[in-house]
Every structure is written in structure tokens, then in C-alpha cells.
Length: 332
Image (cartoon, rainbow, N blue to C red; front, side, top):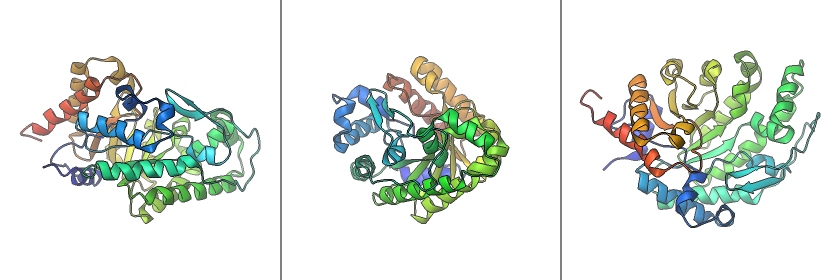
């Protein structure tokens, strides 16, 4: 019997596990195959668990994530949230050109909701690793003021005046980490997608210390820390690798073979557009090509980002078939 937690741990340490761990970022796509609306799911955490559990069992994956939600922390800070078939999104940004240095937040129902989702996933899929999400500080900031305003602020911030705001956001994120850690997840993935907008110098100056602090805090909770930046983060992978995370979750534009040279394990990175539109045969071939490039060691096979609604289970399962073929080779 496969020890799914052990093969993930082997891959996170950069070793070649007995089989390639396959953990696609399943989210709202799981609702395509259950009779629940997204409104019903967000009223009852058990429905999210049922939809994800069904997908995990049908696909024979090696780990599971909840829905990817970048709004949790921003909502706790006062941002109104929309709910659509694609998931939750910010309805409006609540700050313009200036921000208070000490941001106040309130424990929200959705924070407790995600804790319960992780807790229930641990019980219903006791043999699979469960990975939770928190949002990185600059992505939370981009929800408060908009991504465009964030870029302008950083370009004009000659005296690092944002430092108190980021410190305040990190404290909020750490408190959310504590809440999620009560569910005893196996890993937490920090989502910082706005990082791909910036060059290595800006990333090093602004992003590195806060992300390193959050990684340290996750490990303090006894949980594996992972960092996700989607989009083309090729130029900042070296800086990402210095922030202390065990694995880097990278999108399809990034060459994972090159990314591994920085010493971290890698997580990814099949194109979500390919998974949506290609044939299972094309996806299987692309999976084999990807694994041949990384040679399997230190690689958790996944999608580059959250899999899009409408993606067929057959296409997702093609990843699994490709990885199984690679793992069964005599030279693996």
C-alpha cells in the first residue's frame, strides 16, 4: 500500500520517491461533478469536503487542497467579497492611495470554515496529505488597494514606508496560520501571485523578509511550508528559493529543471489551459516530457495553478497516467 505522506515528504526533501507524488490543485473544478451549487458549498464545509473527496478518489491523487481563495485575509480586513461559479473574489478595494499602518481585522466565518474543511479532509482522507492555503502579504495588500496601485506604491516607495503595513499584514496571516494549524494540515501553501509582477531586486527588497518570516512561522507550527507564485516567475525563482520554503509551486512558463538548480523541490507545473483544452493523450505526453526534464527527484507533479472549472476528469487523470508510466520505468 502506498504511503502517500511518505512519498510527499521524500519529494519535499529533494529525493526520488518510490512514485512521483501527484497533487493537482483541485478547487472549484470539483463542483462540476457534484449536485451542489457554490452557494451551498460555502454554507456547509462538509459539502466542500465531499466534492474534493470524490475528486481525490476518482483521480487517485496523492494529496488534496481546498478551494484556492485569495480573499480570506482581505475580507477579515473589511473588503466585501463576491461569490460566483468561479469562486470568491474581491468586490471592491477599500483603500486608495494611502493605508493605515496598523490594520485591524476580525475573525471571519470563512476562516473558521476553512479550518473545518481541513479538519474534515484529514478525517475523510486520512491516508492523504492535506495542504491548506494562506495568502501572502503583498497579495493581501493588492486586494485592499488593487494590483495596479500596489505596483505604483512600490515603485514610489523610496523610504520603505510600507514596512509597518506589511508587518501588520504578516501578523494577521500568522494568526490565520494558527487557526488553520489547529486542523493539523500536513502543509500550508502561501499564495503570493503578485510577486511575478516584480524584478529580482524589488522582490529581494520587499518580498523576501516577510515571506521568510511567514515560512518560519509555519514551520514553528510543525507544518511543511510551500510557496506558490503563478504566472512567469522565472526571473525571481532564485530569490524565492532563499525564503526558506521546502517547495516552490511554479506555473507553466517556468522551466522546472532550471528551478531545481536553486536547491528547493518543485511543485507543478502543467498549464491549466492545456488541461482544459487538450486531449488526454496530449496531456499524458506533456506529463512524461515534464518528468523526464526534472528526472522525477524533488518534484511534486501538479497543475501550474488552480485547475479551471470545466476541466474534464479524464484530462486531469491523464496527469496521473503519465506519472504512473514514468514511475514504472526500470530506470526510474
